[in-house]
Image (cartoon, rainbow, N blue to C red; front, top):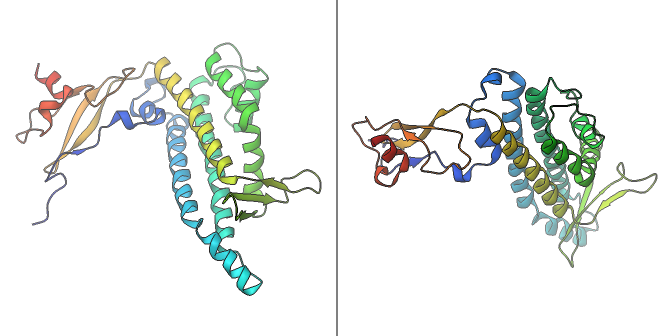
Length: 286
């Protein structure tokens, strides 16, 4: 007989300590916008494109050993189609585009929440940042978000915007691996000044640094929204055991943990196997 999900143990689904701010914020409903298309799509867009970036990063890492294959082919034959380095360049460029797409989602969420404030718009992610830099948002737009966007504008956003535009509409760049440092550089003739091509000496470091910057910005903005908006309590799936789904209700507390909320499945004939060490279960029983 085929075993049902969770037959041998409780398959935990509720692990808020591992959630990022986007996941935490999106778990709860914001009643004024619970049916708003841009709001709900913005949350999912931000989360999904970050996940796509991580998948592309894994593919890029898998391709790195191929640079040695390209080098051996060149040394042996005097020519190489650079199959692996070209694939790496394409994957890396797409990963940069995914970071920008995640910012598009964040823009839609900010627009949905603050659409009645002067200067807030949904058409351009670039304007989201430039308006913060030029202080063009009216009264009611949070200073915390404005300062975060303005700082990002000068620090890393303009460079990301430039690259994303060329990567989307331009030709494929080229990558090479330094034999001594093992750093992978990137060159693109369409991104330089005049006749000088753009060269990024350590492309992986740039991608990683930009990812961290995007992630930090989104964490801080969604954490702010989580704290400031009156979110509704909700029910979430806690886990599976013997084919049953176990639920709990949770409040949008500042600190969510594995013990948060109240168990809603204490009436099951098959009792939860982790109930003795679960604060939500104990809270329901008392």
